[in-house]
Image (cartoon, rainbow, N blue to C red; front, top):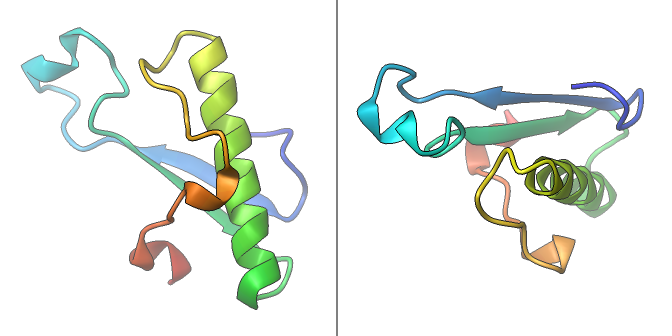
Length: 84
């Protein structure tokens, strides 16, 4: 994904692209992964949450996903393995 800042690397992981449950929405069961090289700690965590929120909002507005992200980006909790 591009356009979210030079410090950001983002991609979507697909669990099982051949699953029949994906017939309703391709992105059901997927995970958004966001990484930043803009440091560490709370500032980096907030940066990732902001970008995850922006990407989620963009995908929802484009009707690519069926649900919108929470209004508050701080309610988005990245998975622990995203910090690796």
